[in-house]
Image (cartoon, rainbow, N blue to C red; front, side, top):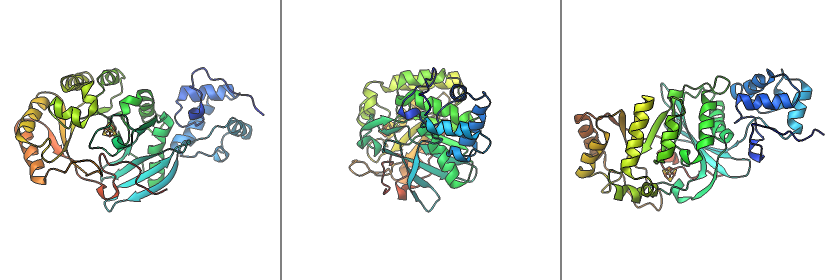
Length: 356
Ligand code: SF4
């Protein structure tokens, strides 16, 4: 039997028994503790991130004794297993992944001609409780580890036999409420020894945790920020997104403006269009005021009905009216193409509908 390894830099616990989710420094620490030269770390990471191999037995350029020691210490390569998948006619595919403790999360693969995107989850459930969102109805269970986040992207790339070009933290959970794991995962997606995705192809979507937006702008990661705006007045926004009571609209917009000014990255303002709720003339005029004169882009999102939520989608002509008015007033805007609604893989609809 091998003894228990004590790690100085690795947060050691049940959730850290996987190689995926560890950075180069941590894997170097691991291999040195196991009596191997430092360069083994990159070999190990190469198998896990680049070749997608989880089984130490298949890592043929690693010494047999080293592989045995990894297994004897209870380590594994990956962290999640595919438990189900459902594909829409447009190729959008929703995956259900089982975590080591039995919880499940969903992620969505969205293929387009020039990009292959994965929308991944950062928490099991969500505590924010947005009233239009399927995940918000679930309540919060726990944060995902960095490995559980990165592995969604890696496993979907392997399943699709393609290179994932874009990734968005827009699945289940509020990414900035699981700040450390989300940032670590983004760094691993971007790292040369990781999945090598361009930082400018990575997006974090938040409901508006103001201190975390400022913290994110200090990370020196050229990632994109998206804000779930959805309303242009505090009363309505608080009704849709309860977090707005803690961080009201003026503070959230200022934080986004500061993010754009500091990072020079355009912030996306997500606006789910709800019939008779946020699609009137007054809301549109306020939206222009909020978005005009700084580096942002308004993304108008058709609402996908969720059971037990009292909302209906705005008609297409209303969306077009919003788009035209915003553009006429010099605000960059677009209407998000609906993808995957038939398998409940569209925005705000992720909540484990797949059968296990
Ligand atoms: S929209 Fe996002 S932040 Fe709001 S409840 Fe759903 S997952 Fe949480």
